[in-house]
Length: 352
Image (cartoon, rainbow, N blue to C red):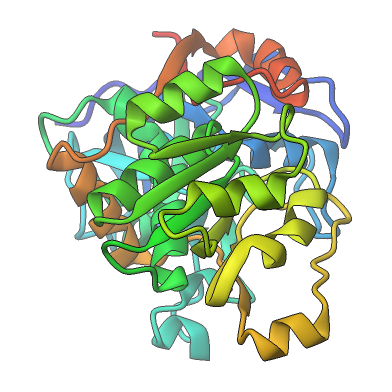
């Protein structure tokens, strides 16, 4: 028997580009034939959510908008074509809300590259509401016994950095420099790397982030706010002093993207994941060619990446550092995010 579903729900709504957010009641949506309706219990807060509200990217964004794309909860309704989920199942809604399923990229399991992809909290309403929709084929099954609050950040931050490490091709025993290691994505990237047998040099700023990175297993921490020569310090932090085999760029400013080619070792790989507004990747051609450096971007993972990333969590190898706050506190969290004062992740708890 389906749970009782109200007609109205609480949500954080951006009425226009730039906000401000409005905490108000809106109608509960009805699932289409291939969709599930998830009663969201927890939703992580990602820097992308702030970018979406502020219109930082040259990609059309839905307005008014309910943001959020790390929602964990239970299925309370489903469309007539849905066979992947039953009422009462635990489900996660991610950045990739749905895709066409029939283009070249979808046929090759590169669903995130689909030109008609639907994006939670960007092109369709997301998880900063009590009830949210997602295409069943793209929603994640959350195993019984896993805490939903801790699982929420894995649905975007975890999958994204796990995919980035796979794209980097870094192997056990090698060293990866994670830039922005003390943030929501970085704290997970550090743990995935460690679980994969990779050594980590964490790059970030402040004592709180240093303490967290060291506790999570970083072999070295380079504080960019105190370093007089970041390139030299990162190289010195690698076991042989030759630099990192790979660099995972999660920073929200442009400068780190320009520095990475200077401390990655020859034949190393630089993976750009962070999305600073209006930023550019620049690298000296001679240095890049002679040292055979690879520079690439990595977007969110596909459905299999999601299964694997959640499996790391289910096996106890990943623990997302997070703080819980009520849905109504989202504007305060965005302020802290803009000030760079968040270590780990904030997870919003929905009102009952």
